[in-house]
Amino acid sequence: ELKVEQNPLFLSMQEGKNYTIYCNYSTTSDRLYWYRQDPGKSLESLFVLLSNGAVKQEGRLMASLDTKARLSTLHITAAVHDLSATYFCAVGLTGSNYKLTFGKGTLLTVNP
Amino acid sequence: DADVTQTPRNRITKTGKRIMLECSQTKGHDRMYWYRQDPGLGLQLIYYSFDVKDINKGEISDGYSVSRQAQAKFSLSLESAIPNQTALYFCATSDGREQYFGPGTRLTVT
Image (cartoon, each protein chain N blue to C red):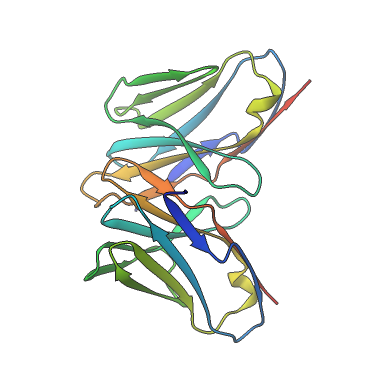
């Protein structure tokens, strides 16, 4: 059974600071996703990581994937209030017919 | 127009009632999914379908059933709603690379 663990689950940070959210998973995977969710809204795709060593950046967010360590990170650089949201990682099992297993999410609050 | 739509967006129902949540997509994807989201638990897969004749149970299918009426339509039913089915429900489609989520249905069972 695939297990996906995110930490921290809650993150309060000041504007301008840097921080990293971690996503560990328990079995071999060939796909990892990061999503953003605003309160009461749907999930917005941020990054799709498909290979070991993949690194993607969009604005103040950068995601990376280490398949050997079964670890993905979402790094936040110089946080701004607009980044306040819940961030989920989701992992697809190799050969699982595109099912995803989600982490519990990290609630990020960026304070002025 | 949105690519993945869900109706209703909000619903309050009573314990024991049957309720259907509907999902439609214009993306032309064969793969469709129903998820449930509870606070602090992420998303859990209820059912998924790869075409009209292929429907599969997910992690938490008990108490739910689905119908794939066409490639574009995938409905989720609660045969006899109970309060612990109060949650946010999402439909999603996939092109085999990414999943695309609908806006969600907030269901409250009293």
